[in-house]
Image 1: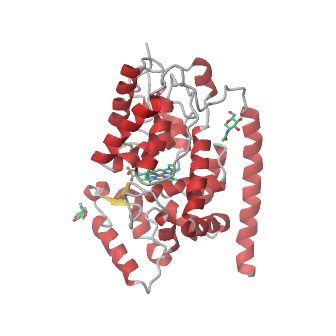
Image 2 (image 1 turned 180 degrees about the vertical axis):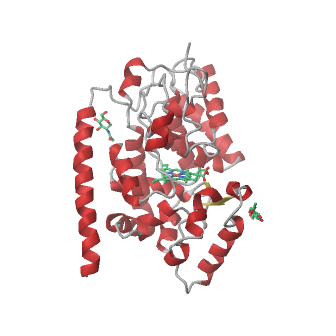
Image 3 (image 1 turned 90 degrees about the horizontal axis):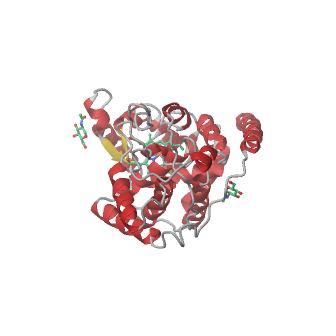
Length: 343
Ligand code: HEM
Ligand SMILES: *[C@@H]1O[C@H](CO)[C@@H](O)[C@H](O)[C@H]1NC(C)=O
Ligand SMILES: *[C@@H]1O[C@H](CO)[C@@H](O)[C@H](O)[C@H]1NC(C)=O
């Protein structure tokens, strides 16, 4: 008991401090941005949702991983200058984009899928629908198309005329980062610990590269596993064969982050974490970190209650999509091509 209570106390205090700090900075940043609305395009582009859905259906049917790409693109967009389509900008002579930032390079995909959606919308209603809104709708559709929850998507974002390579490196968490650091990155965006755990459930779909789980499978993976479970033993052998301890070639090798149903949006990710089988260090820490009293309780809850997970995931995705960029509300635009600012 004594051993248990001291980290939890330290953790509680830390969180309290972090929360207070971010609540304060949040209120300082609070500006009178026009709110997003559900019927933003009702008059100007009434078919926007159908057009995006149709494109996403084709994309996910041809490769279910496209669903994962769409969800992750939206996340990486919103964590840098707010949800403003900055992630989609290509590098040019005058603009350094975010695509080459450390968490994005050789990793983020789905850009051509977004181009296709944008092209369809430009034929349907030219110059109306922002790339930032496209990302938001596409992420929602992606989740439904692989079996996840439905939620309504507030719209009305503008596209940025800038991107930030530096903020992409700073704000987006990485696989081997500690729990508290990741929590603070979410708090900084106005997202709670609960939002962080629920949104991490997006790893129920998609793949990770060896580069991002090598340290984990040759590190504490065995310590978090149930040593008596032969299936868990086989699992780590499989991961190690995909990802040998050394070698640059193998860094590109990939595996599903949810080893049970990698193409289905369900709560099996949380069940995996309870078996100690999280592929990324950042995933497993939600359940296994000594500082993770709160996150561990949430993992357990979502592992047994898929509806609670779906509900929270939907709410948290709306909050994620609500991270605004005051600059783009003022000086933003609706890009004609998501890769370049309008001239
Ligand atoms: C909590 C902190 C998070 C960390 C540290 C993290 C880290 C990662 C890493 C390292 C990968 C594998 C990339 C690669 O190997 O190329 C990945 C993939 C992915 N992430 Fe996260 N992530 C986090 C949160 C999120 C959130 C909030 C979402 C969306 C709501 C998300 C959606 C995805 C998806 C869908 C993939 C699979 C992409 C694919 O198949 O290529 N992640 N993440
Ligand atoms: C990549 O993974 C496969 C198994 O999926 C394995 O046979 C191969 O050796 C790995 N590549 C490298 C370079 O280790
Ligand atoms: C979205 O942000 C606005 C302020 O920009 C706020 O009034 C509203 O409550 C937020 N909605 C959600 C669901 O977080």
